[in-house]
Image 1 (spheres, one colour):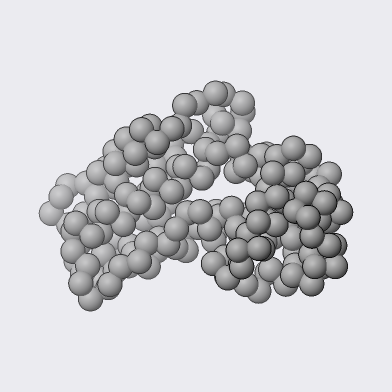
Image 2: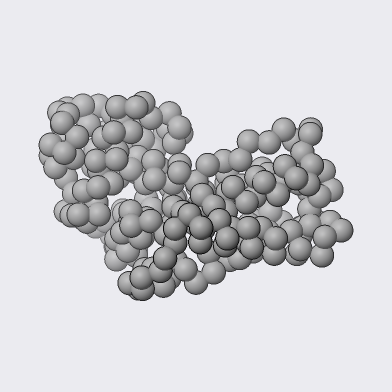
Length: 211
């Protein structure tokens, strides 16, 4: 496995981020045909550097997915001072990031590629995207949900189930429609509107004294 499997998304240097941006562009253009050579050429670096940083092609793909997923930022809250306003703002920011990321051309392309290779013995791309995309992203909101429960602002039995409900409220059918090729307008205005709506609905369901 590549070295990127053992790193956190925010540990990439600015130069590595440039390389990963180039890799994302090539994935959109070339899909599964992406190679270390093409990335090195696009990013103006040597293949030796790529192997040193990421280990192999699978490691590069993993780092690329991690870098894309890192655009859904983990809300930073002080668990000792969280209140209803901070909780709402944190959840809504996460919803905006999530919608913006999954509706972008890069994520749509990655997910289409992953679906096409899901379960294939000769390609780990499906597992790479699943582990470093949606499964990694959900871990970033759970501490905020748990902090809300500890502060008696939220009520739920399982943060996993609460997150699934949140995801459904935020994403609805947007992702599947995009994957199937429908042209959906998801600019800043639409994203902000949908994120605010989903946050309000989530708090009405799980918020203490708000339903």
